[in-house]
Length: 140
Image 1 (cartoon, rainbow, N blue to C red):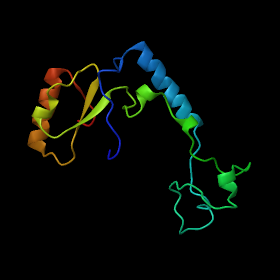
Image 2 (cartoon, rainbow, N blue to C red; image 1 turned 60 degrees about the vertical axis):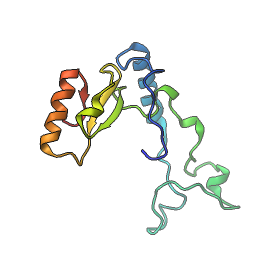
Image 3 (tube, rainbow, N blue to C red; image 1 turned 90 degrees about the vertical axis):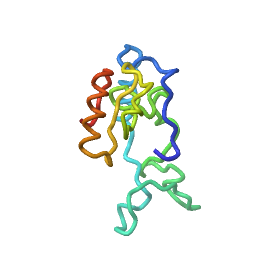
């Protein structure tokens, strides 16, 4: 997650609260209406990949927002600020590589994802310690 900050637990309602559930539902509805943002003319040339690039041409129909052309990325497609960066369950996802990184995590707000580079023995230790603390494990 380079360039993106992780949401802080202090200002968030608990993941299981009614308020958070409503916001997560709203985020899912917004995401369902969001178009697939594709790069201009990516459907026309194989060499142009569909990953988003902002159209900048002076006669670009897509830049001008002409009807019938794909939609552009705009701020109006964003979800609620509180739910940005959260796991779909509403928990803050924390990447863990050892047992010490479980310290200070709140079972009501945080969920654990064990790093891919962690071996079998240490993975078992982390999973056991997380279960003792009541933390949800995303990839056990």
